[in-house]
Length: 244
Image (cartoon, rainbow, N blue to C red; front, side, top):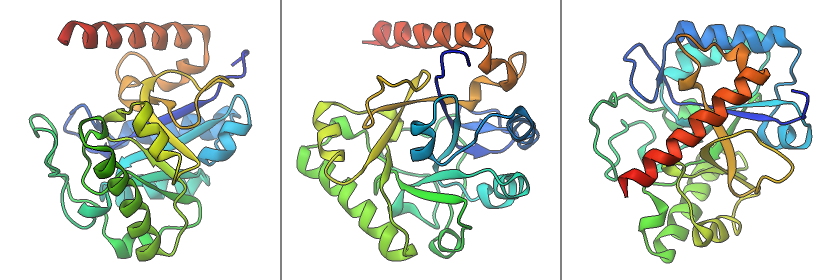
């Protein structure tokens, strides 16, 4: 990437359901093959921000299929990644109350013992206690979701938790201000590259869902990829405006 932008990739569940949060395991393996062979620096989230032109890998929600399908591929290639955990649902399923489950597979989530046993190349981050849209709760409830999630993960795993992913990628100035009390970095789901102008409490990510079919991940780091992501970002914003 000639302009030295970095990329934070987002994954959720590795399965063959073709849902909006799913990536087929074979496709994930192809992504990891490309990253390992590309010469790009794949780094932990905080280090990627300090090194232009690098990549960070993140997983939201903490699906248990990470253990069986993602971790072996990452470990084989020594690629670091971050799992963002919904602490109130560890060992359960993704049946949080804030959104309907239509077209989203109901999958088991990692338990505390499994999270505690993750190797050092896997970092743990917070994804709130109950996965609400933080813009729709009171400041006191928002702060409780953030504070208690961080505390629960740290207490149950013995690991520091300094990074946050906003559920649904949704935040506001108030939410970001509260997040800054507990976390060094926070990520959303804005379909953009990371630049020196990016807000560390609202870092953009690019969902791996967009790199299936006719547009492989290897094109992301080309001018064609920049155009593709720019158009996708524009279309997403148009749809959001139209739905209001």
